[in-house]
Amino acid sequence: MIEGDPVGMVEMLYVSSTVVVVGAKNKGLFSPKRITFWNTNEELVGAELSFMHPIKSIQLNHTRVLIGLEDTVYIYDYDLREIARVQLSSVATKFAMSPTAENPYLGVSSGLLGEEVAVHDVVEGKAVGSFKVHESPVHSLVFNERGNMLASASSKVACGRA
Image (tube, rainbow, N blue to C red; front, side, top):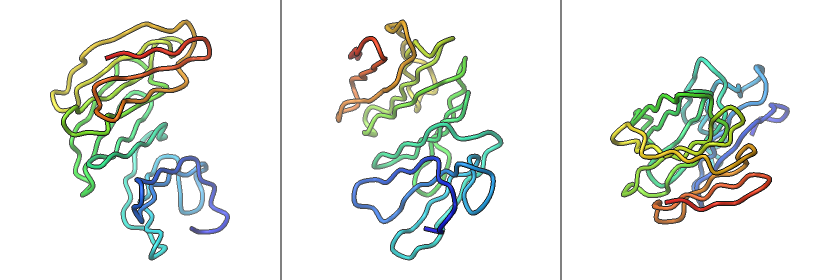
């Protein structure tokens, strides 16, 4: 990595040599509006994707890269072809992507306080369900290893949903 460049988010898939980086400030190599694929073996930039708005979340699974903005979620394959774009009805605060291609689901927390959880099928491009299970903002969302159950947690409660 380049010394001194502030990093806001970083993700790595298991034993891959590629690290996905989002910057913390609009200076240097990294930017909060750009996702950079950094090859740690060769110490160079492999690819970049830029967006009009700051990136709020990044997640990787074996076949996809999820990039969450304030009201849109982009899903790419590793050749950086856009697979899906999910336009959200309200500002999202947390994102989770199913780890499997068999269950291509996206979990999103939203609502006025971030207390609602919605599940989207990214292949069909439609919402599957929505749950208001929290009275405080959702702090975490995660799918199980099969991608058919979603757990959410807030400061007051933890829930599991299918």
